[in-house]
Amino acid sequence: MVPVLAQSGVAILQYHHISDDTPRVTSVTAAELQQHLEFLQTNNFEIIDLAKVSALLASDQALPERAAAITIDDGWRNVYENGLPLFKRYRVPFTIFVNPKLMREAPHLYMNWEQLRELQRYGAVIANHSQSHGHMTRRLPNESEQQWQQRQLAEILQAQAEIDEQLGGPQPRLFAYPYGEYDPALQQLLEQQGFIGFGQHSGVWGRLTPLTAIPRFPAAAQYANLTTLATKLMSLPLPVVAAEPSSMMVAHEQLRPPVRLTLATLADIRPQQLTCFFAGARVTPQWQANSFSVSLPSDLPIGRSRLNCTAPSVSKSGRFYWYSQPFVRPRANGSWPD
Ligand SMILES: [Zn+2]
Image (cartoon, rainbow, N blue to C red; front, side):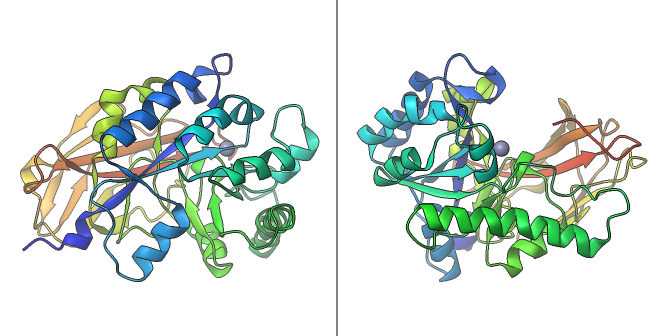
């Protein structure tokens, strides 16, 4: 008997710009977003609010068989201009992650609070993307761990204070890491402050997902394609209970960190059908009981990269379990590209 709760999950779509004249890599057109919303509606997906998912999981309640969530990072003005008509029409919940300091500094680029309040009336939750959208895991030269913590706490809590004040009271404590970058120390800070944290590595939010490392599927550019997006929306959370490395931040010298993932159950998976991909190359995992290890087929590039692993569900034809292990490898000087 397959544990049902271990199987179901929520596929979260991640957007940035809604526009046809912004960088394609982070943009969908309004027509593409409309296609996505149509697809979700006609295929009976329940579009679900992130705070509600968290509550359902916390109380051990089942998630809908087909569940998706919509998130939009950075609060670009084009989301108001091109997205509002769609959100008015489809009336679905969605979450916008904003950077209050950047909104003050570049008001021509970002939505203002009044526009965000209007979006709130049509289903938006306004949530936290830090004050200034920095690489939060980076320590400054000569900065102590405590000084780093204080600096990041201010990034998180000052942004939340502004959001709460502008949106009429305490809002759900949802945090999207800038660039999807986090490490165990940052996860701990968020957890202590009662936030759940969202990354930018792909995958499905399930019962076993750490609440400070929730995956999202990018839905822009080549990922806007409905055929590939449909597979992701239908995917299931691979029931990973332990992962090595435990942090996506690796040392500059660490070219091929060993990866080892342990699953809670193999009940609905045929281990020999699990495949991983890294930098376009297919990798065959080595199994040992409920764990598998992967040797990266090429060196980690400078900056962000990920290993994706999928396995078909035995009981649910056409659906795949999905897991993504993100990496950030810095240059020798400790920096990496945006
Ligand atoms: Zn962002």
